Image 1: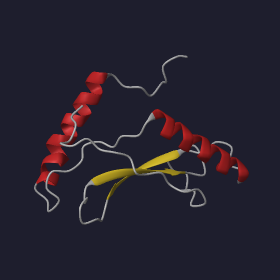
Image 2: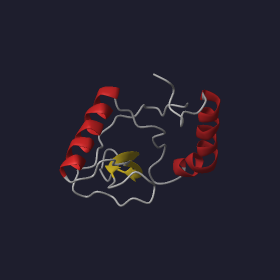
Image 3: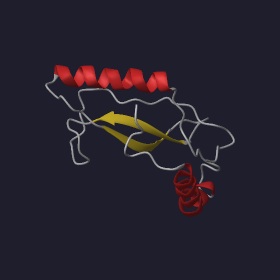
Image 4: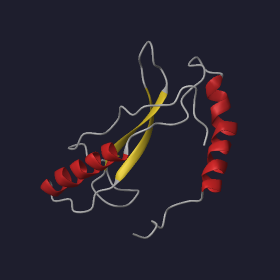
Length: 118
């Protein structure tokens, strides 16, 4: 299998994360949340299971090439008010496709603590 076209180098990933920490992470640390998550972890098996679910449910709706949108989010819980992400299917394969509210989003990943750096 060849490398996907949208892969980036480790260096670019490190630079992107460092820029996020410098421009957004620092202000998040000063918020009422305190130190916040830097990452969300899912296993490959969990992601593959979700992608298979999205493909199957989308096909049932006549959507042959769905997309996945990743949303930034935050828990609203007393003991975990940290940032997270959730994955939500779309009804098409471009960034302007509508969200597909007929297929459930995906969440409940883990996060390293203290926060992991890339």
